[in-house]
Image 1 (tube, rainbow, N blue to C red):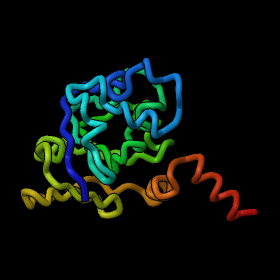
Image 2: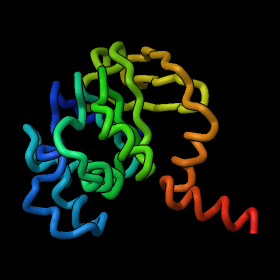
Image 3: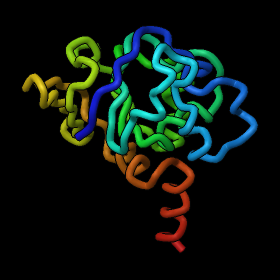
Length: 164
């Protein structure tokens, strides 16, 4: 369970991690600057392991940089819940191991600071602050395995070790 950080529509990758920080790929470095270009530039100082980003339409639009989901996972974000997610960001987030849920009802119904619990297997998002439960399509087992492994590369390494 984590605290919700609420963002609006069209949060682009420059807001998630400004271009001036793309000279490094270290997750800790990127995490220190996560959301610095957004309307919450102090996000990196306030976010804690297990917290959740809640956003409006088209989260992660803009460039195809993988630095953006790396910055969020490095900062401890457990999941992004949005009305919709830009396709390239969605793909990059899966590759990096950042779970995403498109759920307009949850994105609209969860307020900043609410305590949120996400169950990817059952497709439930519970706002512990209000008691509301939101339902989404459960993520397939193979996607949960990618997230559990820490991303697509680690998932592939694990599979190769198992088949060796």
